Length: 204
Image 1 (cartoon, rainbow, N blue to C red):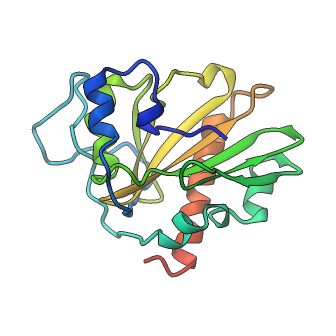
Image 2: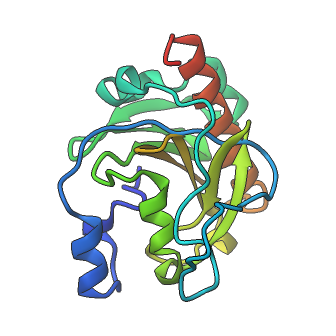
């Protein structure tokens, strides 16, 4: 599992960007839905013309349970639905996250970005430095495709960042070099599963 949009480790970003991204912070929550509405009601934009802050989360979720136990974010049936063959889950030892790696087929990672105290808005503010940037919504919660390191989608590596509240977002990264086409769809499916499980765990 890769540590996705963990800005202290992102290569090639300007020093000022890294410092801003790596400031100490707490835990938070976010929301998102399918669609392309990225309006924030603010006239401030980044260098690439994107809004400098994420849309507000209408129904905030408390993700403390999954931040403390990251491998509980996806059930075994969820991972099977992602076509990860014979998955083995492994928690990250550097940040709140978990990866599901199969013997063959794809792999999925869920990482909780607890250092960014303004949640997905911290990512929006850096959008002009990100290798690719595509705001969407996942099940009504603000989100954006984007990886701080490089655009590896042609190689089957896709990253989707989803807010659960205005102070916390998670990254869903799917990787399958043998079948790169569906990777972004798989990352979105996994993100939807996390939101479903979060609501079912009493995180609202």
